[in-house]
Amino acid sequence: MATVSRAWRWALPLLAAGAAGLAGCGYSSPPSGAGQSASVNLSLSTVPTVRSVTVSPATASFSGCTGGKALANTQSTPTKLGFPNGRCWVGALGGTFPITITNTGIASNIDVNGASAVPSDDITEWSLCNIGDNPAAPCTGRSNDLPGTDQYLVQNFGPYGENSSGLTDDPQCDHEFDSNGHCWAMQGAFQTEGIELTGPLQSTDNSTKWTVTITWTPVP
Amino acid sequence: MSVNALYRAVLVGAQGLVMHLRLWPSVPLAVLALLAIPATADASIGVGIQAGPVLLSGAAHPGGSYALTPVYVVNTGTQPETIALRVERISPGRGMTVPASWIRAPGPAVTLSHNQSARVPLELAVPDTARPGQYFSDVVARGSAGIAAGGADLAVAAATDLEFRVAPGQVSGSWLSLPGWLLPGVAGLLVLAVAAFVIRGSGLRVRLERGPASTSAEGQ
Image (cartoon, rainbow over all chains, first blue to last red):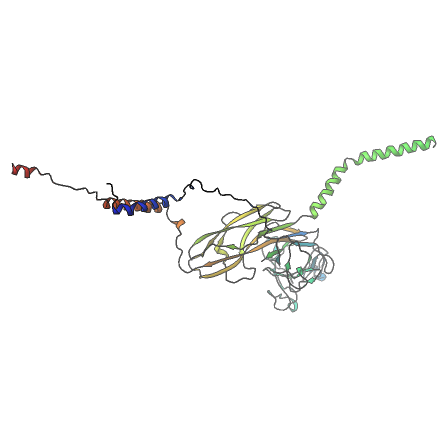
């Protein structure tokens, strides 16, 4: 009578389990007569979960420039910034807001920031400065209310008023987006804004073309 | 109606017809101009990013490199955009700030047309000297296409959270990072061990014996 030794009794299941494990498949066909499984495919739609913003300016330009010093022949012209501390506008404080910022994604805080002004010769930039209480980068001009040498001040404004302290390099809540001083915007909410720029006391760079960039960012 | 009056009427009619014919070539130009006006007025820039945070499954370890889930970005403006990702701390959240140098986008910046989207891969490289703990920052998608409003360039960006944890201890290799030959090698050794065990238990012996030639000679 053929008998299986004790070692075989242990080894056979071990071999079978090992083979199945190594093969990586434990498939076995269903027993005959088992019920057929059935499934239903259901499709589910969800709302978009994208955070986005769109900016669409109407035709606009820095205009209405004022200030500067006529005796030094550095007075502003309507479209050119003069020194010292000339001012130019895109739009008009209290009435014209040519830039439209729309929250095209889910509800978010809308932040805004500026950046250093870059001259066409790319040598000496103007850095952003701020005024008012606790300025991030204090303006060093007259009474700390005006930009100093190689500084400039950018203030965005809208129907709710003007950003009194000015934009910074880092994104900050765009209070023009909310009459309560916040910047929470629901999907589809938009704001129209303008920009006021105050130039430096003097510029060490002789370029007459400068690039100023303002960025809007929706954040969680 | 007199003959003269009739003649004048015909003449005026003919002149009108001639004027109409002269105007015909300018009609397509006028249509093109009309089409171009809304296109210019509606020009916009826009960037979107996934609202869900960028996470790492499991904890990171000092000295380890990890692939983060690819980040979804979309161009929501009408202008083509080249979108680049970078790490900044903008939104409020708990944890240490992620140094920008830890995050790398292995591929180039993506260029997207209107409403086009892409998933951008990101890699996290944790230096050996990283402090264990929770890290938090934002992944910011920034569009390169500025849109000019006078002398100002307007730009857009969109942010989403970046969160992960660095656990103490140097990086330990995962199963997937083991050399490819290791698993088959271990499996082969296991099979050999089982075979040896089975042969030993079955009683099969290989015996070496000296031949009985000299003994039989003595007996005879």
